[in-house]
Amino acid sequence: MAETIYPKGIRTFKKHENAPEFVLGTIVITLKELREWALDEGAQYLTEYKGEKQLRLQATKAKDGSLSLKVDTWKPNQSSKKDESNLPF
Image (cartoon, rainbow, N blue to C red; front, side):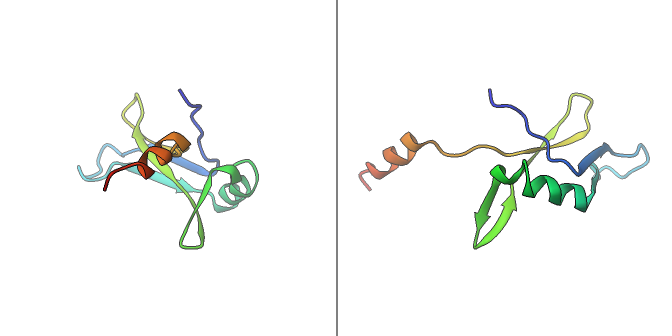
């Protein structure tokens, strides 16, 4: 199992007990901290889409029911790319 990577500068909190049903929680982003992390140790997790750098995150439910954001580190492996090239269609 891959190591779980949490981006620095992003914090999640359980929804307030009086929040409406559609609210899942609160996310607080400290831009300076996130930027520093993304340009240093988090740089290896950045992807590119249409010429723009992106950080892919997965939103998951923590054991206590709160929202959790972790870096999506999934990458297709080389063997699956090779297999796709052998498809008959």
